[in-house]
Length: 153
Image 1 (cartoon, one colour):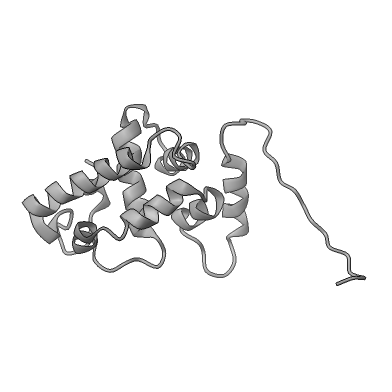
Image 2 (cartoon, one colour; image 1 turned 90 degrees about the vertical axis):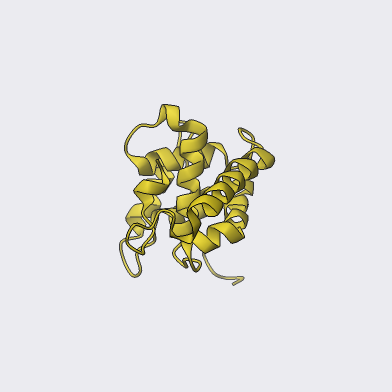
């Protein structure tokens, strides 16, 4: 290593300064070979922080696990939680496409500055508990598989 040359490229987005949409697009384009990452796997790499850690914790909620089923190694279950939270807190400002809406919400809440951990926990855990108690494990599953559209209503 002492006599080696190490090349590095720094990618910085100047505009818009309040999000990482360019970095997300680069990750998405680089992700064309091998196993293609899911949108949530890419988000996890770009928007790491307290909010990402909280999503992982919420994903272990017993009522949620009963409803969703076994943990998804491709993070689709975490994306469902993110979708719920984004629509719960910012549904009034939703604009298509959903992927960009989720990216922006996760980026802006990365450090839990917009919504506190307790607000987020209360919103998700309280809602999931009511759904679990009233609809049971078949909630959101009209035909055995979880239905994302029903979850986001």
